[in-house]
Length: 512
Ligand code: NAD
Image 1: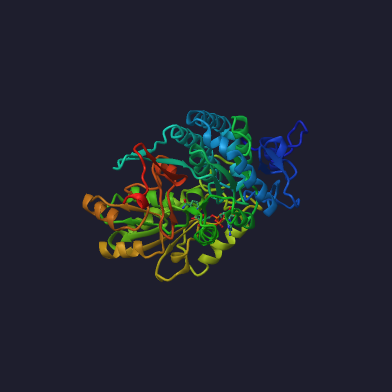
Image 2 (image 1 turned 90 degrees about the vertical axis):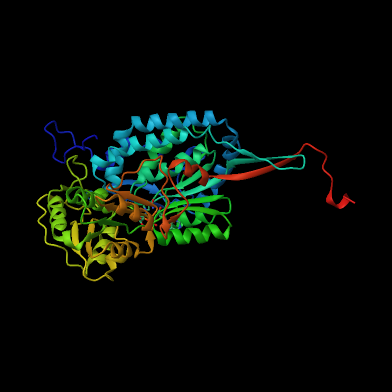
């Protein structure tokens, strides 16, 4: 990743670039001064010229001025997508695939630029964002491969008829994404949606919209026709207007369970379907026969990666009482060694929390906790930025709010269990069902855990390893439908059945 210029005035007298100048140099020319609404292949201001500002959680620096899309802008974006739909739907799958492959190449070429944008905009550690565009490019490649492989089927029926079942794109999809993996969340939706031949109006999170602006430009350069992808920068009201719009055929949302419920209600009013990828409160179970060193590596990684802002984080640790003390000590040692601070420093492992509001939320949820006293010699927040001191909390009260609610911050809880049965009860004692990680040396235990745990993804002796080829589907209040894998294609297609007579059709009215 490119280094940001140092704040000191260099000897040659040139003023170092401020983060806002760096951002402006990376984003397309056309989207300056709040013209960040990408509609029908062009940059636009919001119709009522409303706007908002992107601020870096790294140090509070002003980054970029953005347009705040309102109802009129939503109308225009949906109309542009509807207009583009017939030609995109009817394009040969191989031609659509070729465009998506060019998008993949362009995204990979600009990987460094995406990394700088995402690190400044979201506060994510640069060593992580370096991989964001590479993964996004791979996702476009994977789904490009699907674009010309969508097959229908025939159903054998008697009576001189042939029945065809075809899969056709749904139409115009509304995609609404959260701030925690801005580029990854957007591409997880765009790649399968486009491969199937749908058009899309995407609303990125208001806290982290910048990478989608660069993406819009690269997609256009790669030959994506105008109107196929439209991007509306905006807030919750923009997302609500989009989800409720009668011109939308399906809503695909990733974010909190509370917002997911609102989106499902809005879509239901139009009798439209939803794909919902929502929150989690995932357990990591450590049995006494586990490799404790590896299990501690996993617990610390899953809890603190991406500053604790990962939906599938398995930060609710359940450990066998007999090994609790040893395991806790191992986790403490690992946390104490982490480098926490400036996300632009490639040695940093934990960067900034996305916003002051999110820091306040984590603080409120954990204010009744007594975290373990752990020296963090490498905790070096940047002045003016949003940082939260990572913590490990011993659970004594099973009704503590941080045990029930998704904290979405660098907070691990540790609770012990006496028997396997108790471990499973505790693991499932949540409204969520997104993921789980199980650590054991016993195949029998692994097999039981896999069957008993109520979660869409169960990792056995590993954690947070997901391929874009593998479906992810939240159980309970963690979601509806799936993302990734061939299964993502099913979300964005609808069925059309054609019955064709080759014999003579006769009306049942005329049969006697
Ligand atoms: P959020 O629900 O607050 O916001 C997500 C998006 O929805 C934003 O773009 C926001 O502007 C928009 N929005 C807000 N209100 C809306 C409304 N009424 N109608 C339509 N859109 C609206 O979530 P967040 O705080 O941005 O993200 C964190 C949450 O996302 C966590 O709960 C996390 O678990 C979840 N998440 C889940 C997954 C998954 O795959 N399951 C992945 C990433 C994040």
